[in-house]
Image 1 (cartoon, one colour):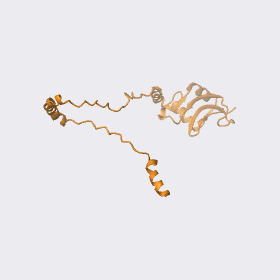
Image 2 (cartoon, rainbow, N blue to C red; image 1 turned 45 degrees about the vertical axis):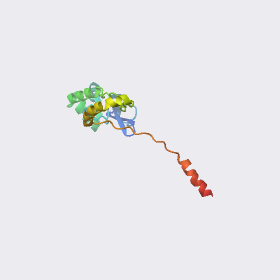
Image 3 (cartoon, rainbow, N blue to C red; image 1 turned 90 degrees about the vertical axis):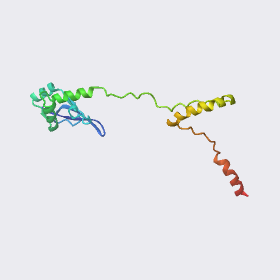
Length: 171
């Protein structure tokens, strides 16, 4: 029986994912595999973290005469049992396994609190207050003041304004 080591396509549309498998050479591309030997995910950002192979089982299948396809031969050369990129692969896989650091969002943003308005001074306090107010107002002018809140105005509905015009049009 002639055995090939090739990629078995899986995943969904526009998101391919491959398994490296040992197949009978008559089996269809996505058919039943004799054995799954690893995975190859093309959507992983780090190139060295894309392929994860079982080097011992691949070495066994190669020893009994299995022929790899061109792409699988490149993957075996790089990431097989004695691959050329094993150190980079281990580093990339450990980096991929680390949880992503998400910064703490902090306190939710809220509107600034409005200062409570002070009641109007009485006549007795008004005579003493002008001297104090003049002394306090000089440094206050150099600082910036918070914006003044807008007052809400009530708007009349458009229907009531249109009613007199309709009455005039009917006459």
